[in-house]
Every structure is written in C-alpha cells, then in structure tokens.
Length: 408
Image (cartoon, rainbow, N blue to C red; front, top):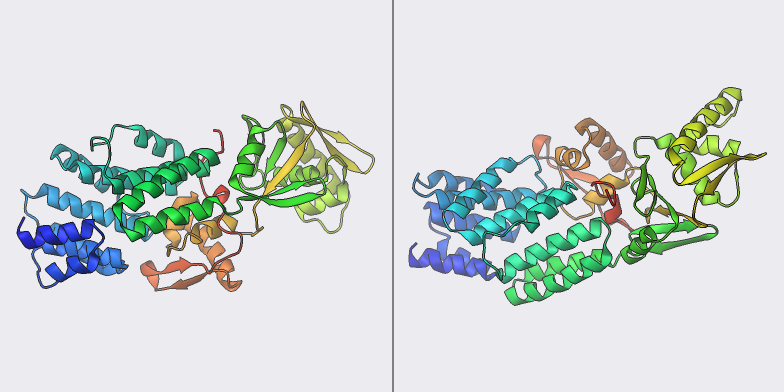
C-alpha cells in the first residue's frame, strides 16, 4: 500500500471523509476507487459509491483476494443501508470467510456484524443472536467502532423481543464506544436508537383506561399474570403461553372485541360488525358467529373460556383476574409497512416484501393505498423506484416490525 492510500484509509477510519477524498480524488487505480467508493457512501451518494466499489473489485487481480473481499463487504453495507435486501447474502459470507482466513480480522468482524444487521432487519432474531454469540474473528476487546456495532445489534434484538432493560444496558455501552471512535455518524446512530427506545411502543386498553406505553411497560405487562391480547402481533398470551391468531383475523377480531369490553359481555351484533363487517344481521350471520366462537373457544382453552350471555358472549379468563389489550400507538391499516418505512430509509417494494415475508404484489397494493392517502411517496422508475414516508406520529413501533412471536 502506498503512502497516499494509507493516509486516505486512515482518514476514512477516523471519519475524515473529505480528507480521504482529497488524497485519492484524481486516481483510478483499484485501491483508490475502493476508498473513493467508501467515501462517497459515507457522504450519502450510494449509487456512485456502488459503481466505484464494483469497478474496484473488478480491477483487483487474483492475488488480491483480500482487497476484493473488502469491496464486497462495503457493497453489502451499501445494500443494507439502501434496503436492497435482494443483494446476494452468500457473497458477504464468502467475503467474510476470505478475510478471516487471510488475517483481516477487523473487516471479517465487520462483515459478521453486517450479516447480523440483515438478519435483524428481517426479524430473524434467534439466528442473529446465535451469530453474535460466535467467537469474533477479532480478538477482544473489539475496536470501538466494532464494539458500537455489536452493542447496537444486541440492543436491536432486545428491543424487538421486548427486553427494555437489556436494550438500555447495550445502548449505554454503545454510546461509550461510539464516543471513543469520535465518528459523528456512529454517535448519531446510537442516539437514534435511544430515541426509539424511549418512544411509545404500544397503547394499553384495559377497562376504561387507555394510555401509551414505553417498551419497559410492555415488558412488565408480558411478565405479569395478565391475559394479554396483543394487537401488534395478533396473538393472545399469558406469560410464556402463546396463542397466535395472525392467520385467523376473524378470530382475533372477536377476541379483541371481547377483551376490550371485559368484564362486560359483547352483543352479537357488535361482534358481527367488528369481525365480519356485517351491517344487516340475519340468521346466517348468527350461525357463522356461533361457529367462529366455537373455534376460538377451542383455541383459547388453556387461557380463557367464552360464555354465552343473553346479549352475546363474554370472556372468562383462567387463573388471572386481568385482561389487557396492547394496540399500536396509532392504528393504521398497513401499519407494518409504515413501521418499516419510518426508519427513514428509501425502500424498494421487493425489499419490503422480503422483510415482511409476503408477496411483492400484496406490498405494491398496500403502497398504492398509502400513496393515495398521502402517507407514502415514491421516487424513481422501474427497478430503481423507492418508497419513503413522511414522519408519522407514533411510528415506528418496534413491536410491529417482522419477526418471530415474542417468547417463541
């Protein structure tokens, strides 16, 4: 490595982007292209950065596998930041293996953290945690920048579970590490995560009470003996016992309606209106209601019973005297998409579909609805089209983001 490249690389590592660019702006050899690509990425020109890194990777010879792997890692980071979830994950794993085998353990650890961040974005919390628990290629203690990334990942996993206490400890460690780096962007990322942790995560509905909850409150409610109807995940839970109803929207609507009214009963007409959208009730509707109540009664048996009353039906919780509903801070029809878009990044519809585990067509219809309502907007055409959302009060709630069921 010549002195100019070494100086530019050091400038980049310490956050001096313009200083790095000044040293390599007029050079087109692969090492200079790679550094310029990373610098442009840090300045926010991701399209130019991606092109420069690709050119650099093509320019490195067969004996420069480490340099090529570093370019691939940088490309993977750009893909992650620009929410290009279709970027080939296996290329990153191969690059990490190459870097580790050739002794570049710092960049190998960085690649590992990128893999974890992608898993976290897709909601694969267990796998993300498993990879974080693996011995890092870099001997401990990690350099401050890598330590910040690791703690941010740990905080992200804890916030999604939700484990507010663990998340706060991880963010405190991340803040210290970020300040040690002196890199403004890292410090800002930690502060952004802290802001999210201190934002309303859910809305409590219990009896006549309705109020916003922080993640700490949600954690306490999950750990309590209360029967919880979670409208963020569409499930019913008490402690570690979970009854998922995400694929049974009618049953969940019946359950939520009865939980909001508990300990009172709910009229049949109201249940039909909330679950089926029925405006004019006839005998066929009542027969269908009896069938669905029977199905719900069978699924709820470990946690609650459903008794018929003169007016309709009422919940009878078992082994607890409390039923609460956890709803999103703001009720939206396409809340999960809004929760993803509210991270401030520009998403493609295909990446949204990957993150939500649904079809691109379904996501596109939802985006069209949101655009018509003025809640999302797009720019670009064709494959380059991206979606963003203006700031929406109450969003995002991390409980709406995709992932496994809490406690599963």
